[in-house]
Amino acid sequence: MSFSPLIRQLIDALRILPGVGQKTAQRMALQLLERDRSGGLRLAQALTAAMEGVGHCQRCRTLSEEALCPQCADPRRDDSLLCVVEGPLDVFAVEQTGYRGRFFVLKGHLSPLDGLGPEAIGIPELMERIEAGSFSEVILATNPTVEGEATAHYIAQLLAPRSIAVTRIAHGVPLGGELELVDGGTLAHALAGRRPIGL
Amino acid sequence: MSFSPLIRQLIDALRILPGVGQKTAQRMALQLLERDRSGGLRLAQALTAAMEGVGHCQRCRTLSEEALCPQCADPRRDDSLLCVVEGPLDVFAVEQTGYRGRFFVLKGHLSPLDGLGPEAIGIPELMERIEAGSFSEVILATNPTVEGEATAHYIAQLLAPRSIAVTRIAHGVPLGGELELVDGGTLAHALAGRRPIGL
Figure (cartoon, rainbow over the protein chains, first blue to last red):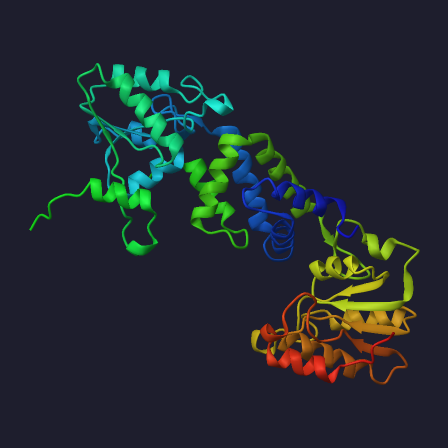
């Protein structure tokens, strides 16, 4: 019994943040209290505003406080490309590459053992979106995990009867690594997916 | 440009937490928005309550929302022992050892280069506290760093004219480590501070 109740409550509340345990929460709470109370109040306001104000984009299902997220509202984007990802952070990651087509954000991946079927992750909405749009290519950018691959294959099968190109992001060796550190599965994909060097 | 304004503001606000960079803040914000909005609101309330409600204990200067912190308000503690530490987290650490005397919390350590002299870290208040109390021993438990040692020495010199025992926590090898990994300075302290084995 050492901290007073308000500090204890703050430490407990901070522990809901991912990757924050007891010691880190203590350090965070005391740092805010001793050094940056106005920052702490700003954080409280930003949390309240975001938790109460942020919903989902009507079109791509990413997190957004507007009916349409910035990507969907932008009229200069390529309406023939649709990139399907597992979550809002993936939108950010794909944006960084310079991709300027449209997005659709699933709620994670298929996971039958956890009871997450196509309806739970929003695949019916994805089909509606494709129906309503005029896409010539759907890029499946789910994670390169067993579940992400299964989700991509499931969507590819659903889309097979339509005249839309369905692609999957390439698997291979990541840039900047060393070949001896790459796992066998990745290297096998990298070999199978080899391409002529354009000179 | 990828996240909507409320989410961007939340990510920026989360970055004031110690050890939280851009990527971690993104993960925290999206985790709260997607999985635990009520937890996010609870965190906002706990932050506001703590930032506005927590002050300093009148007696030991630790963080507390009451005029007296739990340690100072407890009448069963040993009034002859005073432990001087650098911050509120150190109170918690010393408490864990089973220590049940009184505390005094400095605002960090002496650091002349940063303009932190005795007044800035609360040494006059410490002297008043010792004057007002009936301590037979003052334990200097500042950190085992250059600044912490200097602070301990400074306080020891101030207290030298009084008939109070002034002690410093022992330096030596930490439990559970390996001798070959201990630095030379620590090992020298451990040797110099050797004690007969009580059988």
